[in-house]
Length: 221
Image (tube, rainbow, N blue to C red; front, side):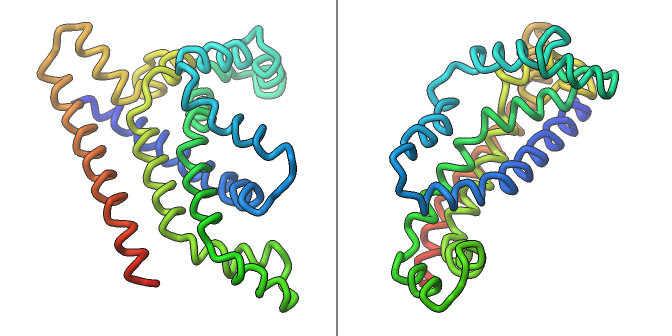
């Protein structure tokens, strides 16, 4: 087992989940509460990584973050470091690629909240922000938790985008999925099998949690 790859994978998945939770929850709340004409465009942009090949998204991220790209040059001028082939680079790629796996469940959860409760809160003088924190978010907890779990699990198994942007640098950008690929290339099937088993167990645990969430939510209603 490549424990360095396990550590990088958990670090990447953890930070991806934290960032998408912090940014995705208010954005999803805004999407769920908005009725403007351009809403469909924002929803399409969020869902784009679901249909876009990971290598295509990875290529564009690499083009922007490489030393010759605009973001890469800007970061290098400020810090002297590089975005591409660094942990920061694969984290940015992971956040972009996993955005729909967080935001779409969040939006679905918030849209499922009884609008009468939201309107009652606002009629009592609560602001949109406080209504979201005190009413919408607590009532949509099951969907929010599902999005958090799904985001973490998907980030754990991500391969294409991370490989394109970060390569396979041990202890820096080499995740468990990339470790499996490298082991297979080296004909080390035993090591690849152990790493693959870890991902299978994580995937099974995620499916079990997501199957239990609707029943738990119904029991609390």
